[in-house]
Length: 382
Image (cartoon, rainbow, N blue to C red):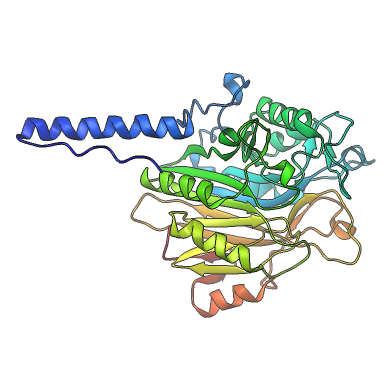
């Protein structure tokens, strides 16, 4: 936690004004010490050129953007899929959704590298060609979370390649780095009238993928790291999002530690919690007025699983100036590659996905907007 500024004795109107100015300066200095340079234009990414340090700016014609943030699930495109003939139309079914969000965010599940040797032997090693960075950028996806169980599949060299090619494509990264302090550092950026703080953590094995004081890796979701990110960002007035890579694959309900961590994050200042890793949609819970999306499932994911039916969800968030509350839009995705061939399609009907949504409808928190073909929700928190 940041130490509080020391109390100043006020004896006159002039001293009162001066004291307020000094407190403001102290807060800025402490914030910069905790998260390095967090301004929109100068996010501090080691070894990155100036053009790759911050999320791509919104288009000048702001009228096209109906939401500020749009979260997708797991993204993985191996070379065999990227070079398929004919190539898949990866994002053709979601052009409207991608174009109308200021900031599109994916979980980048794997290493974009030519490295040949894995860090350890695993059942699944996920490697992507470096060209996927441009694929994402061309689709207006500007932020990638790397706190997951595949970011280190090809060791530090593979992680360095991923960070470099993403940033060179203008895609900001969060949740992984050359040491724990870099991996745990939130991404702070402007979106319209609001400032957003995004922190990403992994609770998936192997633990050798978790960054330490002197080892590269993904950000481990310790209580200390979660609390520091959430409290500091909340204290600075940011809309705060914590993402987790967690849970068990193919399970459509969260397990105990997911609930405990999600509620802990909100108790410490997060406005919402968003998860992934199970490859299927999990429950939506409202805790103290704040929504928790335990798993968004898959997005573009280059596999054809047998025995399970993957599912996907996109979450859109519009952030009006305070005190107005955010507007949430939910849309299910068809991500079954036997049908859509690596090009997710939006589900534009009411036939949607999880019993927990029906609970939100019964509570009058969510309603289906026929003109937009998606669910519109409002929550007390945020």
